[in-house]
Image 1 (cartoon, helix red, strand yellow):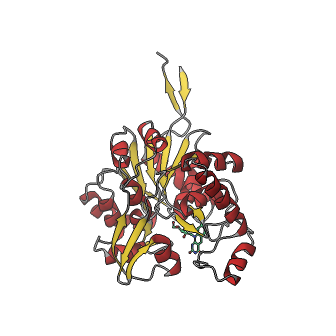
Image 2 (cartoon, rainbow, N blue to C red):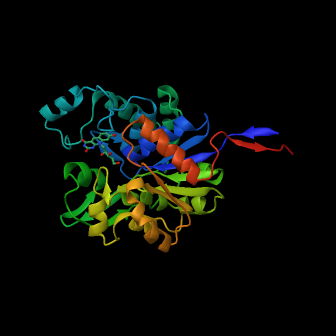
Image 3 (cartoon, rainbow, N blue to C red):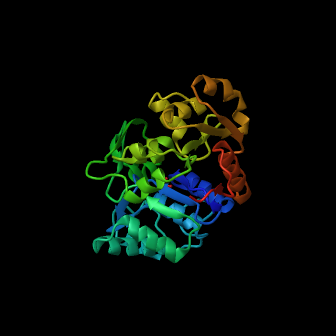
Length: 325
Ligand code: FO1
């Protein structure tokens, strides 16, 4: 007999994904969790490659994150940004702290020397200490473009500079010339459970699913797939999801989330306060709906939600007992 630890893969965007990752990393045994992270938000600022979702997951799991905002480094100073503003450099609307810029310098230098984003991310997580493997969804550029009533914008321009105000007419995932990383495909094929974090489906999860090879790797995996709805009472805890669903005529509330993920999910975790959505979700063909407190406002809530997700995934967090051949 041998004990095998369960292999859990989380698909994550920024803040919500990072907090879900921390809960899962806490309740699962060491070596169990891999987090595949969206790179559609990545952008160049001041000559540096910035990967906001990867960095949010890295900072959260290594304990460096500015907890209230959920992104950036706690206690970071802004001397570099202050100087850039004095110099009237472009794009200083993106708030980059000095410590954060140190990470971007490191990554940009490694990329310039030909190292892959996957390999650089491994070096960053080893150096900073994260209790999970963090895998970029793609090594190549795969930007998310937002087509708005004020024109076509790159993601950070729309989200940060324009404060997500321009109404969204369409979203474009530019994936030509790139594909899912082999590390992500391997993690998906070997997973016992795939969890879709309470991230924005259209801005964080679909950019990954749009990568050539990603959806095939997910659908080809024998893992159960559990999603956590990012909506509570029809609204996102943070961010423009509800408005986007309306602008894009994709329905409302948990029913819209179930529809967006309909070919992927074995179960959906929704907030306890949304128990009235049960019949509509059953009608939408969801085989398993789990109620839990889905607002991750502190570490205890993150752990509680992680346990509910594992329950929905029918996974024993302590591991599997297998006969050796
Ligand atoms: N979000 C903001 O709302 N304003 C910012 O100035 C900002 C800067 C920033 C810098 C580094 C980083 O890793 C994240 C940053 N974010 C900022 C968050 C980021 O725009 C979003 O969280 C994600 O891209 C969406 O998941």
